[in-house]
Length: 568
Ligand code: NOJ
Image (cartoon, rainbow, N blue to C red; front, side):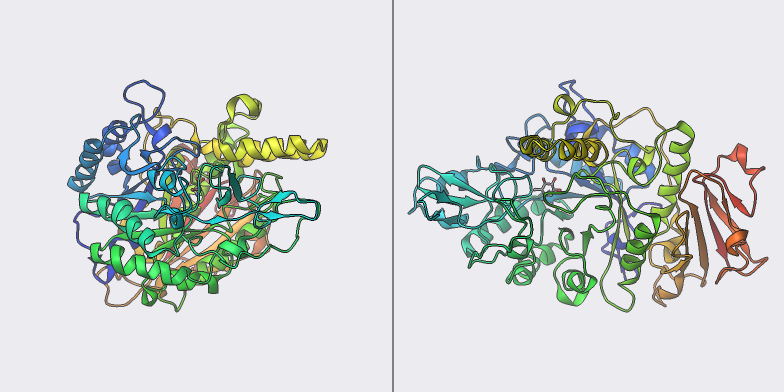
């Protein structure tokens, strides 16, 4: 795709972010310019032309704020300072202008469900029960069991294993943290706290020129403040999964609307929210319906979480899944928007998951790696919605080698806590399965250094945005466990838009397996497929190398080969 080459808000009736390519940079591992082993903002600046040439329209920079780095910057101790290994405020100012002068945009990560326990707000809050900021976090007295043993206020399990509550000796109360004990949750019920978030974490950066935010854990600000116990769904465990107690809570839409009205909208800032534990389209629409005035886009996780055993206890117990399950999720999330005023994101990687080629493709041989990485790229580029790439995805980066020892090489707090928990159980099978799961799914895989010696891959051009970014999605051969096939049809694209083009259809045929796939056997000789009339279709893209194209067979796809046919 080409670049947005002006700073206007819309192309015709279409907001710029719908047809933009977003690219996520994880600062620690992107580009190190001072050889301290940490990537840095000068490194990102040095690579801006690379991103521009790649066709990136908007960079999403993961947290680069001051932080003790217990959760790699998602534990912020100062919203207005830059972590010194990453650079300085002036570096960020320079980055903003480096993006803008190239017609690109920059969004930051907004992490305001929680802060670090080192943030001055929490330091004040924990200093005494009467401190004015006491209520900026969620404090609760202990409960006691029949034997007088102290117990947390609820039985909720945290994301990183263990309870969501930590006891504070000094003030003799527990504080709530959905993540690590060092990441106390802010109390969004408190209006002064919300105001401080808007001023210090948002307006400060918008005033410096950033174009919006990827919003961390956006649906967890409103908790059930009657604090009930979660039902016991994991018998024998002390801490129970409790997303219904703190996710999509009673005041969540009120809070997000307020954030939009007071901060995002006045700055025309783009917003993309991280929306976990929300698997139903009817739950998602209220967040992204244009009329609701909440968020522009969200990340929904059904597809990217495939293979995990759920978000809590079983997360790293790897579960194999058939291609038809992947296709079902894709079809659901491609089709739910039709006839609504919402919008969708397309992604299969980020900093919280293993690499796509190692999960949805095949990294076992060089040939399979190349073919499956290209097929995954083609799959993503032909889906409806705004595409988000993660650093290194463009060169098909893979997971860490399977024989790297977990204790020595895995650094992520979540990986290590789950591994520790499995080992503490003494259950040999659980330990083995957790090791297997971590080798495929761990967040560490996406956090290793970007490999800079590969050549760029520029992808699709904007000529086909009506078809691929906006087009209606029609699944074909949905039950097949080898072929992934769909038609994209630009009938859904609004008439009168400056981007509107002659009605077209595209047939996307992908072999998601390591064996040849016969298209004719399925009556899939292109001509037989809806929207592709014989003699009128033409091959638009193939994942084959040029030298192999002369021996391409119309009726057979090689292992992991994919094609897009265009029909007029
Ligand atoms: C979601 C982020 O993507 C993840 O990396 C982080 O650990 C949690 N939110 C907590 O901020």
